[in-house]
Every structure is written in C-alpha cells, then in structure tokens.
Length: 631
Image (cartoon, rainbow, N blue to C red):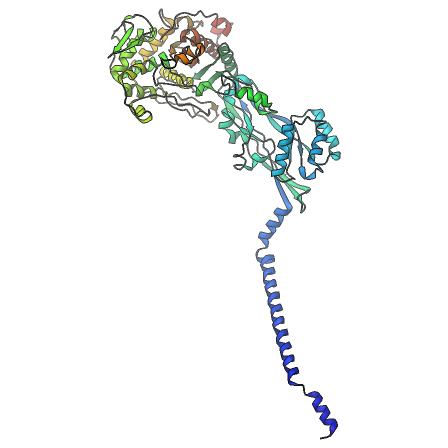
C-alpha cells in the first residue's frame, strides 16, 4: 500500500475517544431536545386549558379587575298618618366627599376644604381612620347638609382640589317630630357589626332604622340599592362609567295614628314630668294616639348630629328616649279591679247582688290590709267598682285564688306583647303559682293573692295593655292593636271573649257609674258632650314600702295615677289608658287627661254630624275640678 493511500485511510478513521465524544454529544442533544419538546407540549396543554377550557372563568376574573361596581343608595319610603299627613320622608342632602387616592396630601386637602366647610378635629380623625382601613378610591364622607352656596363653590373649585367630590343624596326629615318621636322612631348610622350584614350599609352616610316604625319596618322602608358600573385601570382609577341600574325606592307606610289627636295628647301630658296615654279604635284595633312624655326631637339625632345634644338627650334624668306607653311597667292598681270583678263573677265566687261589709280594713291571719276608705258599709259589685272598695276585691281574690285571676287577666290582654309594629315592648307580669315558683323559687302565699286582687304586689302592666283590656271589656271581643294600615287588610273579626255577656254588662255598668254617678271616683271627669257617656276606672298604685321609703325623694314616694276608659258607653268606639308616674290620684291626674283626649277623638269622629255643629274640644272639655281619689 502506498504511503499516500495509507495516510488517506488514516485520516478517515476516527480515534476511539472521538467516537465516544460524538456519541455522548448526540445523546445529550436528544435529551435536551426531548425535554424541550416536553416543555413545549406542557406549555401548549396549559395554554389550551387557560384559553379554551377555562376561558370563561378567567374572562370573568379579568372583567372583575377591569370593572368596578358601586352601590347606589335607594330612597327611603315615607311614613304617613291615617289622614295622609307626612310624618317622615327623605329630603335632598348636598354632600362633600374625598377620594384619598387622588389627594396629594389628605391633610392638605382637608385644610383647603375647611375654608369653605367647617371640619372639626373629630371629623378629621374619622376621615383619616376611614381612609386607612378601606381602598383609597372609595369615597369618604366629609360633610353633609351643605348650603347651596357651599355646594356651588366646591363644584367650581373641584378642578383645583384633587380628590374632591360632591354629590346629592338624601336625609331623613321628621314632621310633628316631638309628638311622633316614640312612634315613628329615627334612623342612624350602621354600627360596626352591621356593615357586614348588608353591603349597602357601607355606603357613606347610609342610615338604618334605630327605633319605632323606622326599626320594625326597616327592610321595607329601605328598598333595594341600585348599581353603577365603572371601567378602571390597573391602579383602580376610574376611566369611564359604563352604565347604571336604578335603585328601587322603599315602600311607603300608612299608620293608624291621627297626628292631630297625637299632638293633643302630647300637649295634654306636658304638665306632668313623666306620663303616657294610649287611645285605641276598638272597631278596627287601630292605635290613634300613643304619647309619652318626656319626648325628644328626632331631627336632632339623625342628621348633622351635635354630640353635645345627643349626650344631653341620652343622659337626661327622665330618659326621653324611653317610650313609656309600651315599656313602662306599672302596678295597675285599682284599674285591675275590673279584671278581679270579671274573674270573680266568672268563677262564681261572687253574685251581682251579694253585699259585703267594708269596715275599712281586711284581716287575713295576723296581716291587715287597708281600704282607701275608712268605712264603706254594705257594698255589692256595682258599688265596689264605682267606689273602688279595696276590701270587696280582697275577699273576691281570696275566694277564687290567684291562678283563676291570672287566667282571666291574660284573657283580657294583660301580660303579653302585641305584634303591632312597635319594637321594645315589655311584657309586664301577671303572676300565678307557677310563675313565682319558676322565677323566685318560692311558694305562693295567700296574702299575695289578696294584694294582687287590687293590682298591687307582683302585678304589672303597660299602658298599651291597659288600653287593650279596656277595649276588650267594652266590646266583649279579643281586640288586638295595630299600627300599620294596609288597603288589603280585611275588617277584623275578633273572637268573642270566653266570658258571660251578663258578667261583662255588670262590670260595664260599674265603670259607667265610676264616671257618671254620685260617689263615683271619677265623676268630675264626665264628658260634656250631649248624650255621650264615658265609662272608666281610676287607679292609684303604691310604689313605696317600708324597705325603700327612706331611700326615695318626695317625688319618688308619690303614687302612680292611672285611668282606663272607653266611649261612647252605649256603643264603644274608643278605649284609652293613661298613666302618670308619681302623679298622685288617678281621678285627679290621669282621668282629666283621658277625658280631654277622648273628647277630642269623639268630636273629630263626629265632625260631620249636625249634633256636634259649633262644638269644639276646648268648649267640651272645660276646666276640670279635682275631687276625691280611689285606692
């Protein structure tokens, strides 16, 4: 083999190490290529999953990042009385807000705004706290109730003050405010625990019902919020508004209240420190008046609230925020004798013509129970009601026992809460053997039955319950109170009471005698309307005993004055109850109030009747002389 061929052959043949290196390189390339192909396949699979399979889900997420929804507060429904008079409605509210994210410096922005709208230190602190805990693009309320001049000037200066925003919303306005305060109630800002219950609560300045009708029917009055849709950039700044859904206004409510009669009742109570009166229409159950004093102006506590004013109202000695007509629990005193008489007749332990001797004191064992009169001679159930003889009802209660007395009291409407739209009612106490065993873990004693027979001891009730009791005695039916009217409501058909009509008639005649017959405890409170009689029952409940008398002021030692009534006596239309705390005697303090309010109700009801032409409540009521008292 020639030398040249040998060299050529040697050049073509690779050494062993070269062949091994080439093999390793080819395997590495294959592995890298395979891995790359796998990654590309995985990437393709993931892209297919994101862009095709899960496209709708991520499209929604993308829209949520791009779109912003804001709630629009609905207009709150109005509240009117039975005559159509407006009691509460929304009025235009000019407001100033800031968007912290657009402010170069929030304190500087507030300083500039304070030259136009006063901003207190407390308001500044509130704005800073709100800006710190929420998105900077969410508006924060600075001030509301602006004048038109302030509102116009702020809009002119808006381009020069970054973050400034003005808008128009609504605030709650109350009419006949002080007389209607406890009934209609008021609205207030949502508390910390409420903002998570409903997103609309987060809206700047949004208010919800806090008491009265505003609280009970808050959801109906509130309505449904609308929405506004905005397109925002990646930093949350609004680019443009895309559309809006209008809010649904709240439902309007009509109450059974007569605002004129309510005002008369409230004015009549003003001469007393703490008192309440309730008037019911016994044909429909509608509450015509439910007044309580002291009262307050809800306009002072719902809009541009002055902390000092609110503190003065909340800490007032006689608690003007308290609705005594439904929350005041009082011993009914001698007004309860109507219940005792009916219970005794129903149980058969007394007869209409049976007479009992009243020596002025009743003995049970070694205990002595006094009558408010020193002596009364022989007396039957009619005279016992008319003259309010304690001894007669001591004996009646003892004969029948507490359980039967309690059952009849509940049947007449005492000791319960009524679903009539008034929140915060108190149940009162109608005691029996089981009640004492459950609540006090003690046995029932005979002396407690005796004292319960005249509405003292453990017995307590509210003025609303006493008015219902009077309405049930007057009609013989299970009257139920209501406050909100509806055109779809049928005429009520209340069931008859499970009491003998003859027994009811006996008690009614006794109540007529209280007001219209000689020796009746409220004879000076007879109506001065021709041919119209009022039936009633006075009451005076003791509030002190040997254990607490020395601890009480002279005012606190005075007895509560009560009076229940219905009229006209021959065809009942209205029932009423009045309680004057520490007012003295029922005939001197409470009966004149009911007389005047009942007169006004009857005259308004009969305004179209020729028989009442030229007669007014003032001339019919006249000046009332104060005489006598009952037990």
